[in-house]
Length: 237
Length: 266
Image (cartoon, rainbow over all chains, first blue to last red; front, side):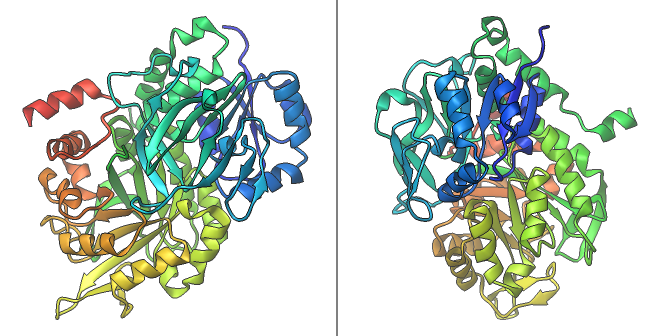
């Protein structure tokens, strides 16, 4: 097999990124948790993770001087990037969590609070997405069952251009679950915590430009789940 | 539609997986890591790990276990036990936890809830509430692993923690713990009605058919249990099947064919 792809997981001090690193490693790529310009430049793909408040997230991107290097890689060079949860929300124009803040402005829309009239907020748990448009991300998902993913958030991305919404989810409002505009991808749920479906969709992002690899999404993920065995057991066998 | 969750809970004491009875007797079962390995294959929606070792000096054991679990389980993980500071929370989140559960220290220092939810976001902060009935059958919140009463009723407390910034409630009944006589439905329903954040019910499951009742009767957002999942073969799949048969909207994910077979035979 050819050399492993380098995936830069942007470290801007917003939340637990160990699980993403772990999933990327299982999916046969080389994760780098980093905010170094040279790492971001040499990476094949980028992941912008994030748990926490919008304003703090954007401030941290500024504080670590990440905005220009991300723009250079993503907007100028077209390097694929995946924003997860807050990382997806930061792709928007503006967010209203903990005051008003700018976003990266790469995908038109705003981020606002889920209305809590008849629904408990945060939206925590497994919810099914509704596919709105074709995307490589949906390759080899089992569409006969509900496509459930793990969500945990109080704010949602309201896209003003529906062409960028590849899948939505319903919880009081219908909101964007997966967005994509050219090389820029976003997922409101946590693929690294969404078991089989999550690993398949993450795999599809990591190998979106490799048809041979995309033929094996399901098989690779099944193998990972079958072989996730504790070291205690290995020692006792 | 948001699914109702099934959550196995792992109780760890001195690094051993234990069964708890009324928060006072603890029977060792085995290594926690092996239990987790099964859960990851069996369609559980989330895993809760509570380290109930009394008077522990640090969280090293729990951190180690959290690191391990997050490497093999691709579902969300909530951990807790003696969490006192934002530094504790930070370490556990870094080790791979998605949410951290706080109990005693939330009662002793309620501002801690606000501080923690400001730093990490409400969605990461679960407040665990242990409830016991007194001789007059009134509900009361207990702390220090059920050893000390607080004089607070769980409904007032639930409302207060919601205001302070809690993202979710893990509601346990000390009376039902390990007794195998089913959830305290009245308690669950009353707490659920008091707040607008998700409530996870735990305590008292003795048979698979008890599990759906936490949702159909108690209105909980998620049902958890500990002991039953250690003793019964394929218990989490059976639990999912029982939930589905009770008309509850659940996630049927990984071993769909197997689960559906069970659905027909149950």
